[in-house]
Image (cartoon, rainbow, N blue to C red):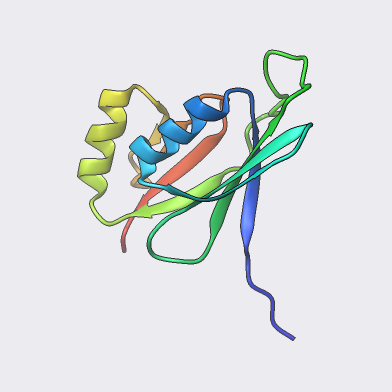
Length: 121
């Protein structure tokens, strides 16, 4: 028996802003969308694998943000041009943590979710 990751979900408070962020910051493209009366799902994909990020917008969510705890859970992405990615993310103002000794950094999306950026090794 084998299993493969299909997608990971982040709940978002501004769907349009999040879709634009993931496209600009990470080059993710929308591949599928599902609309219902209570929620909208948007699936974003990168070019190298079949793994997707699912953004969920709950239409009746009545709080200004989601409780992200201590941000110990996160996505990690490998950049084929780490220096260019770092410069772009620095210009975007979305770098939230750096560990130069380990050669990595984190960006945060509009809702505060963290994404680890790693160099290709």
